[in-house]
Length: 424
Ligand SMILES: Nc1nc2c(c(=O)[nH]1)N[C@H]1C(S)=C(S)[C@@H](COP(=O)(O)O)O[C@H]1N2
Ligand SMILES: [Mo]
Image (tube, rainbow, N blue to C red; front, side):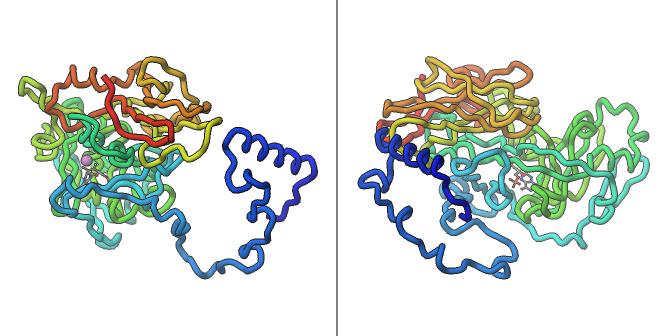
């Protein structure tokens, strides 16, 4: 720090620490006013630091080494067909750094060089085409921030409160700024005239990995906002997120965001692949299936305080923070309850939400050690309100795995320790 505290700001600073001590907030300085971090010269002010040649590509400082993706051991039989979770309890703002953004693979993450990359468009098109990586970079491109949520996110919580951490209950989500070419541009290049009436047409998209993860997408969506993306948060996609090219299907379930995108076929019907029939489908109480549950409905969760992010300070000012999102568009409002949904206060949005992207919310409040049942409730631009767990179970029964967007509850005790619970 090369800035001197002026006498007024020094007085303000001291007043601040005295006030904190009175409020029970003071740390080491509070007891005797002799905090060695203030009164003594520290090593980092005497010796020089790391040179600019030491870290050509930077990683987070080692003190942040617990802010990492984690998996749940018992959830899947093998890490090859598995999932890990974004540490959303430790992040703020809305953008997910690629290095800790959750991964979901059906047959592992593959290493595919740009030189070996090919994308084929075939089926009901005038001219079937094959693009290489450099071809894709020559079309006009766009930048958009979108969330990608696996439909299985929160799926383990249907039967009851289960996993004690927001990373595990809600961490199958990431939110990045994508750079890519609209899928519509590439489809028009191949010529959709030959397809006839587009209203009942589909595209079948698949990846280059062994699973191929094929999915059918209705033409209306394909021509709307789907991107063929090659950058995320400004840099190349990471291997685990589909390097060098993935599909971005805004607001729709993560399974449709095909990674290592290799083929797009224009068809006159949905293929009915494994991923859209036996998987990513929910069954009602009477045994009938919900068909085509593509859109991720509005959802929110408090990330702090939460089980992995307990209250670490004393009584007085407290910030409650979380994330909200909707596959139908913008988040317009988020309410927070501290008494398990009996009363609600409207939270402040970090910034007006982007459409189909994460929105950060804050409730700037005070806490005097009372027990809390924390909940958040999101509303989107369609007027939809995030349901309670009871409401969702009434609609959907007890057989569901996917699309659990219900209100989450954290119990916070007098010490600030938080726990995953259910209220009815
Ligand atoms: N080619 C391919 N694409 C895929 C998958 C896959 O296994 N192979 N998994 C899908 C699933 S189920 C999800 S939720 C998202 C996850 O994207 P991520 O790994 O970038 O988080 O990718 C989807 N795209
Ligand atoms: Mo998924």
